[in-house]
Length: 278
Image 1 (spheres, rainbow, N blue to C red):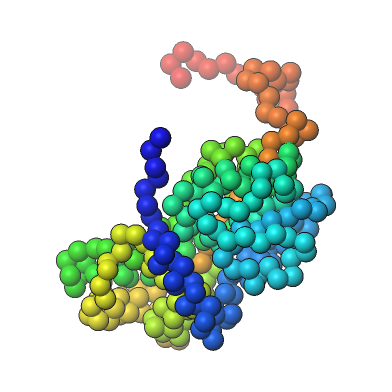
Image 2: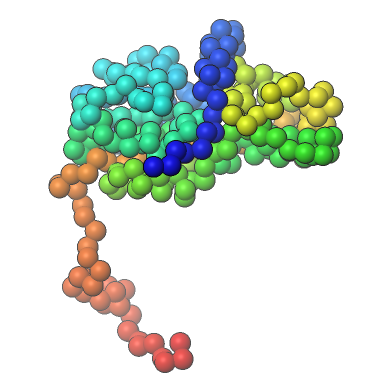
């Protein structure tokens, strides 16, 4: 069995998160996480089911301090959840850093009771697209090469497919896109540092970035994504994935060819056969 490629240096990620928690601006830097949490609660309020054995997988336990009766565990490679112990599992703002996203989701599914709900929230592919582009153009211009600097984040279609691969029933994926404004390029980088979201990629450069690269990146960012008021825009995409542990009571897809009425009748239009030449 092949091992998934190593995306994240988990030791560096833990170090960045610990450093972020010690910063005075840590709480303010988690504004997107709090927005995601509010949206999560709204989604749960619309589910016609009462959850009594919830679990949360996240590196941000403070966000869930008021979440009723939930077991909160870190997003380690091996999630500390018992099989079949929960009727709700939330995987919150961490899947983009995992080396094996399908494996994480499989663990969540196995920890669910039949007909249990899994909700996943993570940054989507449009997040930080401006920063990624500016850094790449600047590094190429200054050094003639490229190095990984922003963690790759999946597109919503691919992320929805992960739920199917993990064995969830009735998977749904949707996203929420926000535009955030910063007063300067250093302010954006400081916000990422305070949130614990700085570069922890396994293939990252293991030396300090040249000042000229960051200066050029700031110039490109301001020229390409600056507002008329001199602020910088940054895209943040939150992807929400929903899936259920399989259960016989759930809706099942019909077998191909088992329909008892014609589509033309339902639409109220005449049915015309296709010609041989198409």
